[in-house]
Length: 316
Image 1 (cartoon, rainbow, N blue to C red):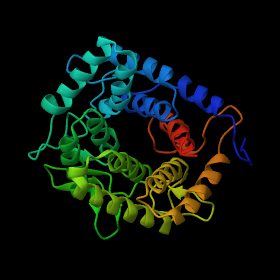
Image 2: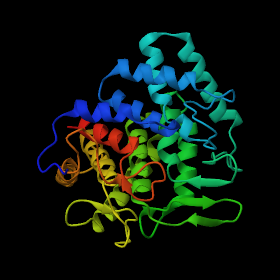
Image 3: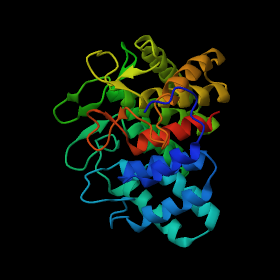
Image 4: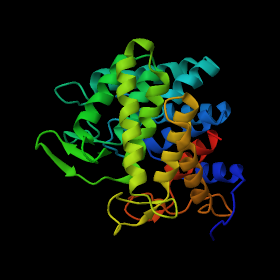
Protein backbone atom coordinates (compact mmCIF):
# COMPACT_ATOMS: atom_id res chain seq x y z
CA UNK A 1 0.00 0.00 0.00
CA UNK A 2 1.46 3.34 -1.05
CA UNK A 3 1.40 6.28 1.32
CA UNK A 4 0.05 9.31 -0.54
CA UNK A 5 0.89 11.92 2.11
CA UNK A 6 3.80 12.68 4.39
CA UNK A 7 4.79 9.66 6.46
CA UNK A 8 5.10 10.81 10.07
CA UNK A 9 5.53 7.68 12.19
CA UNK A 10 9.31 7.41 12.40
CA UNK A 11 8.98 4.93 15.26
CA UNK A 12 7.58 2.38 12.82
CA UNK A 13 10.43 2.98 10.36
CA UNK A 14 12.89 2.41 13.21
CA UNK A 15 11.12 -0.75 14.35
CA UNK A 16 11.06 -2.09 10.80
CA UNK A 17 14.80 -1.44 10.50
CA UNK A 18 15.59 -3.18 13.78
CA UNK A 19 13.47 -6.16 12.72
CA UNK A 20 15.67 -6.84 9.70
CA UNK A 21 18.59 -9.24 9.51
CA UNK A 22 21.75 -7.26 8.86
CA UNK A 23 25.20 -7.84 7.41
CA UNK A 24 28.17 -5.77 8.59
CA UNK A 25 27.60 -2.67 6.46
CA UNK A 26 23.88 -2.81 7.24
CA UNK A 27 24.60 -2.87 10.97
CA UNK A 28 26.91 0.08 10.33
CA UNK A 29 24.49 2.29 8.45
CA UNK A 30 21.75 1.32 10.90
CA UNK A 31 23.91 2.50 13.81
CA UNK A 32 24.82 5.68 11.91
CA UNK A 33 21.13 6.44 11.40
CA UNK A 34 20.40 6.15 15.11
CA UNK A 35 23.56 8.13 15.91
CA UNK A 36 22.55 11.04 13.70
CA UNK A 37 19.00 10.80 15.07
CA UNK A 38 20.36 11.20 18.60
CA UNK A 39 19.47 7.80 20.10
CA UNK A 40 22.66 6.73 21.87
CA UNK A 41 21.06 3.84 23.75
CA UNK A 42 20.20 2.08 20.49
CA UNK A 43 23.59 3.01 19.02
CA UNK A 44 25.33 1.47 22.01
CA UNK A 45 23.31 -1.74 21.82
CA UNK A 46 24.10 -2.09 18.11
CA UNK A 47 27.80 -1.57 18.83
CA UNK A 48 27.88 -4.19 21.56
CA UNK A 49 26.47 -6.70 19.08
CA UNK A 50 28.98 -5.61 16.42
CA UNK A 51 31.82 -6.29 18.85
CA UNK A 52 30.19 -9.55 19.90
CA UNK A 53 30.38 -10.65 16.26
CA UNK A 54 33.88 -9.32 15.62
CA UNK A 55 36.20 -11.79 13.91
CA UNK A 56 39.70 -12.48 15.27
CA UNK A 57 41.26 -10.31 12.55
CA UNK A 58 39.19 -7.31 13.69
CA UNK A 59 36.26 -7.20 11.26
CA UNK A 60 33.14 -5.99 13.06
CA UNK A 61 29.55 -7.24 12.90
CA UNK A 62 30.38 -10.38 10.94
CA UNK A 63 27.54 -12.71 9.92
CA UNK A 64 28.42 -15.98 8.21
CA UNK A 65 31.39 -16.25 5.88
CA UNK A 66 31.73 -12.77 4.45
CA UNK A 67 34.54 -11.63 2.19
CA UNK A 68 34.01 -7.94 2.97
CA UNK A 69 37.05 -5.79 3.74
CA UNK A 70 35.68 -2.26 4.15
CA UNK A 71 32.03 -3.01 5.03
CA UNK A 72 32.87 -4.07 8.62
CA UNK A 73 34.30 -0.59 9.22
CA UNK A 74 30.98 1.14 8.56
CA UNK A 75 30.00 1.00 12.23
CA UNK A 76 33.27 2.45 13.54
CA UNK A 77 32.06 6.04 14.03
CA UNK A 78 29.11 4.75 16.05
CA UNK A 79 31.50 2.54 18.02
CA UNK A 80 33.75 5.50 18.80
CA UNK A 81 30.75 7.44 20.10
CA UNK A 82 29.43 4.43 22.04
CA UNK A 83 32.77 4.07 23.81
CA UNK A 84 32.75 7.79 24.67
CA UNK A 85 29.18 7.38 25.93
CA UNK A 86 29.86 4.33 28.12
CA UNK A 87 33.59 4.24 28.84
CA UNK A 88 33.35 0.47 28.51
CA UNK A 89 36.78 -1.06 27.72
CA UNK A 90 35.05 -3.84 25.78
CA UNK A 91 34.02 -1.28 23.18
CA UNK A 92 37.47 0.32 23.20
CA UNK A 93 39.09 -3.05 22.54
CA UNK A 94 36.69 -3.68 19.67
CA UNK A 95 37.52 -0.29 18.22
CA UNK A 96 41.26 -0.90 18.46
CA UNK A 97 40.97 -4.32 16.79
CA UNK A 98 38.94 -2.81 13.96
CA UNK A 99 41.53 -0.10 13.42
CA UNK A 100 44.29 -2.71 13.39
CA UNK A 101 42.39 -4.47 10.61
CA UNK A 102 41.97 -1.33 8.52
CA UNK A 103 45.40 0.19 9.09
CA UNK A 104 47.59 -2.93 9.08
CA UNK A 105 46.00 -6.23 8.11
CA UNK A 106 43.42 -5.63 5.38
CA UNK A 107 44.35 -6.38 1.75
CA UNK A 108 45.10 -3.26 -0.25
CA UNK A 109 46.57 -1.91 -3.46
CA UNK A 110 50.13 -0.72 -3.98
CA UNK A 111 49.16 2.81 -2.90
CA UNK A 112 47.63 1.56 0.35
CA UNK A 113 43.99 1.87 -0.67
CA UNK A 114 41.89 -0.99 0.71
CA UNK A 115 40.14 -3.43 -1.59
CA UNK A 116 36.45 -3.97 -1.05
CA UNK A 117 36.69 -7.77 -0.87
CA UNK A 118 39.40 -10.09 0.37
CA UNK A 119 39.45 -12.50 -2.57
CA UNK A 120 39.94 -10.09 -5.49
CA UNK A 121 41.85 -6.82 -6.09
CA UNK A 122 38.64 -4.83 -6.54
CA UNK A 123 37.66 -1.31 -5.56
CA UNK A 124 33.91 -0.68 -5.11
CA UNK A 125 32.26 2.72 -4.87
CA UNK A 126 30.48 1.54 -1.69
CA UNK A 127 33.80 1.85 0.15
CA UNK A 128 33.70 5.64 -0.02
CA UNK A 129 31.00 5.47 2.66
CA UNK A 130 32.23 2.42 4.56
CA UNK A 131 35.84 3.43 5.24
CA UNK A 132 37.04 7.07 5.04
CA UNK A 133 34.40 8.67 7.32
CA UNK A 134 34.87 6.05 10.06
CA UNK A 135 38.65 6.49 9.89
CA UNK A 136 38.20 10.25 10.25
CA UNK A 137 35.95 9.76 13.28
CA UNK A 138 38.69 7.70 14.94
CA UNK A 139 41.29 10.43 14.41
CA UNK A 140 42.96 9.20 11.21
CA UNK A 141 42.22 12.15 8.94
CA UNK A 142 45.20 11.74 6.60
CA UNK A 143 44.45 8.04 6.15
CA UNK A 144 40.82 8.87 5.45
CA UNK A 145 41.92 11.25 2.69
CA UNK A 146 44.33 8.71 1.22
CA UNK A 147 41.53 6.16 1.00
CA UNK A 148 38.94 8.58 -0.39
CA UNK A 149 41.35 9.92 -3.01
CA UNK A 150 42.16 6.38 -4.14
CA UNK A 151 38.51 5.50 -4.67
CA UNK A 152 37.77 8.78 -6.47
CA UNK A 153 40.77 8.37 -8.76
CA UNK A 154 39.65 4.90 -9.86
CA UNK A 155 35.87 5.24 -9.92
CA UNK A 156 34.87 8.85 -10.64
CA UNK A 157 34.27 9.56 -14.31
CA UNK A 158 35.62 13.10 -14.91
CA UNK A 159 33.50 13.57 -18.03
CA UNK A 160 30.17 12.15 -16.84
CA UNK A 161 30.71 13.41 -13.26
CA UNK A 162 29.34 10.14 -11.89
CA UNK A 163 30.88 7.18 -10.10
CA UNK A 164 31.20 3.78 -11.73
CA UNK A 165 30.73 0.72 -9.54
CA UNK A 166 33.63 -1.79 -9.52
CA UNK A 167 37.24 -1.52 -10.75
CA UNK A 168 39.63 -4.49 -10.91
CA UNK A 169 43.18 -3.33 -10.22
CA UNK A 170 44.87 -6.41 -11.64
CA UNK A 171 42.94 -6.60 -14.89
CA UNK A 172 42.75 -2.79 -15.19
CA UNK A 173 39.11 -2.94 -16.21
CA UNK A 174 35.74 -2.12 -14.73
CA UNK A 175 34.10 -5.33 -13.57
CA UNK A 176 30.92 -3.26 -13.47
CA UNK A 177 31.07 0.13 -15.12
CA UNK A 178 27.44 1.07 -14.44
CA UNK A 179 26.53 4.42 -12.91
CA UNK A 180 24.62 2.68 -10.13
CA UNK A 181 22.30 5.10 -8.34
CA UNK A 182 22.82 3.72 -4.84
CA UNK A 183 26.56 3.55 -5.47
CA UNK A 184 26.61 7.25 -6.27
CA UNK A 185 24.54 7.76 -3.13
CA UNK A 186 27.14 5.92 -1.05
CA UNK A 187 29.84 8.09 -2.58
CA UNK A 188 28.32 11.52 -2.00
CA UNK A 189 26.95 10.75 1.47
CA UNK A 190 30.32 9.39 2.55
CA UNK A 191 32.15 12.40 1.15
CA UNK A 192 29.66 14.71 2.89
CA UNK A 193 30.73 13.27 6.23
CA UNK A 194 34.37 13.92 5.33
CA UNK A 195 33.65 17.47 4.22
CA UNK A 196 31.97 18.23 7.54
CA UNK A 197 34.75 16.72 9.62
CA UNK A 198 38.14 17.27 7.98
CA UNK A 199 40.57 19.45 9.95
CA UNK A 200 41.71 22.81 8.58
CA UNK A 201 45.09 21.59 7.35
CA UNK A 202 43.31 19.29 4.87
CA UNK A 203 41.34 22.14 3.30
CA UNK A 204 42.48 21.28 -0.24
CA UNK A 205 41.04 17.79 0.10
CA UNK A 206 37.83 19.29 1.45
CA UNK A 207 37.56 21.64 -1.52
CA UNK A 208 38.11 18.72 -3.89
CA UNK A 209 35.37 16.66 -2.23
CA UNK A 210 32.92 19.58 -2.36
CA UNK A 211 33.59 19.88 -6.08
CA UNK A 212 33.09 16.14 -6.65
CA UNK A 213 29.87 16.03 -4.61
CA UNK A 214 28.49 19.10 -6.37
CA UNK A 215 29.28 17.68 -9.80
CA UNK A 216 27.77 14.30 -8.93
CA UNK A 217 24.55 15.79 -7.60
CA UNK A 218 24.21 17.94 -10.73
CA UNK A 219 24.77 14.91 -12.96
CA UNK A 220 22.21 12.87 -11.00
CA UNK A 221 19.59 15.60 -11.21
CA UNK A 222 20.09 15.74 -14.98
CA UNK A 223 18.73 12.19 -15.30
CA UNK A 224 16.10 12.38 -12.55
CA UNK A 225 12.63 11.13 -13.35
CA UNK A 226 9.63 13.45 -13.34
CA UNK A 227 8.35 11.83 -10.13
CA UNK A 228 11.51 12.75 -8.21
CA UNK A 229 12.95 9.22 -8.24
CA UNK A 230 15.75 7.62 -10.28
CA UNK A 231 16.43 4.45 -12.21
CA UNK A 232 18.64 1.81 -10.57
CA UNK A 233 21.35 2.57 -13.13
CA UNK A 234 21.06 6.32 -13.43
CA UNK A 235 21.40 6.68 -17.19
CA UNK A 236 19.48 3.53 -18.12
CA UNK A 237 15.69 3.96 -18.19
CA UNK A 238 15.33 0.21 -18.82
CA UNK A 239 16.39 -0.49 -15.21
CA UNK A 240 13.90 -0.43 -12.36
CA UNK A 241 12.71 2.71 -10.55
CA UNK A 242 14.63 2.99 -7.28
CA UNK A 243 13.92 4.85 -4.02
CA UNK A 244 17.11 4.76 -1.93
CA UNK A 245 19.23 6.94 -4.21
CA UNK A 246 16.92 9.96 -3.76
CA UNK A 247 17.04 9.51 0.02
CA UNK A 248 20.83 9.48 -0.08
CA UNK A 249 20.95 12.56 -2.31
CA UNK A 250 18.40 14.43 -0.17
CA UNK A 251 20.44 13.66 2.96
CA UNK A 252 23.64 14.86 1.28
CA UNK A 253 22.08 18.03 -0.10
CA UNK A 254 20.53 19.00 3.22
CA UNK A 255 23.79 18.30 5.02
CA UNK A 256 25.68 20.42 2.51
CA UNK A 257 23.22 23.30 2.67
CA UNK A 258 23.30 23.27 6.47
CA UNK A 259 27.10 23.17 6.38
CA UNK A 260 27.27 26.07 3.95
CA UNK A 261 29.16 24.15 1.26
CA UNK A 262 26.24 23.54 -1.11
CA UNK A 263 23.99 26.31 -2.46
CA UNK A 264 20.75 26.87 -0.60
CA UNK A 265 18.76 26.61 -3.83
CA UNK A 266 19.42 22.86 -3.84
CA UNK A 267 17.26 22.43 -0.74
CA UNK A 268 14.16 22.51 -2.94
CA UNK A 269 15.50 19.51 -4.85
CA UNK A 270 16.02 17.64 -1.59
CA UNK A 271 12.48 18.48 -0.49
CA UNK A 272 11.09 17.17 -3.78
CA UNK A 273 12.95 13.87 -3.43
CA UNK A 274 11.86 13.59 0.19
CA UNK A 275 8.21 13.95 -0.79
CA UNK A 276 8.61 11.24 -3.44
CA UNK A 277 10.22 8.90 -0.91
CA UNK A 278 7.52 9.49 1.72
CA UNK A 279 4.92 8.20 -0.72
CA UNK A 280 6.77 4.86 -0.74
CA UNK A 281 6.51 4.08 3.00
CA UNK A 282 3.99 1.45 4.06
CA UNK A 283 1.73 1.81 7.13
CA UNK A 284 4.11 -0.59 8.92
CA UNK A 285 7.12 1.64 8.27
CA UNK A 286 8.82 -0.23 5.43
CA UNK A 287 10.41 1.92 2.71
CA UNK A 288 9.38 0.14 -0.49
CA UNK A 289 11.13 -0.10 -3.85
CA UNK A 290 14.64 0.59 -2.66
CA UNK A 291 17.39 -1.55 -4.15
CA UNK A 292 16.23 -4.67 -2.35
CA UNK A 293 18.13 -7.04 -0.07
CA UNK A 294 19.63 -9.55 -0.24
CA UNK A 295 20.81 -9.45 -3.88
CA UNK A 296 20.09 -5.75 -4.63
CA UNK A 297 19.06 -6.62 -8.18
CA UNK A 298 15.38 -5.68 -7.96
CA UNK A 299 13.10 -3.30 -6.03
CA UNK A 300 12.25 -4.37 -2.50
CA UNK A 301 13.11 -3.45 1.08
CA UNK A 302 16.54 -3.31 2.75
CA UNK A 303 18.13 -2.18 6.02
CA UNK A 304 20.09 0.51 4.19
CA UNK A 305 16.85 1.82 2.69
CA UNK A 306 15.35 2.13 6.16
CA UNK A 307 18.51 3.69 7.56
CA UNK A 308 18.79 6.34 4.88
CA UNK A 309 15.17 7.31 5.39
CA UNK A 310 16.09 8.05 9.02
CA UNK A 311 19.31 9.81 8.00
CA UNK A 312 17.36 11.96 5.55
CA UNK A 313 14.77 12.77 8.23
CA UNK A 314 17.51 13.70 10.70
CA UNK A 315 18.32 16.65 8.43
CA UNK A 316 14.80 18.10 8.82
